[in-house]
Image (cartoon, rainbow, N blue to C red):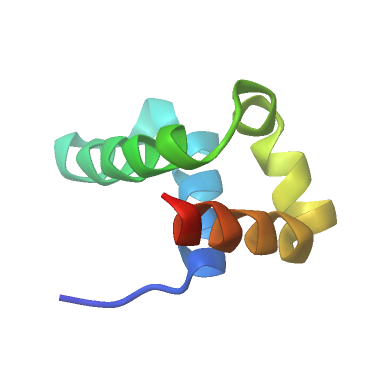
Length: 72
């Protein structure tokens, strides 16, 4: 097992999403697991703009994720 920070998880998800057509079943499964977590934490708009948010506003987005996770 490995532990990922929230930013590492977002970065991995952005990378997997960029290369979705090339994923095998194992990496597609990882992408799906991360998506399930993100669906519970983010709005649809945030999900649709996740890559832009990750690049431009990663720290702000992470603070919102942490706050939502604390209240869930």
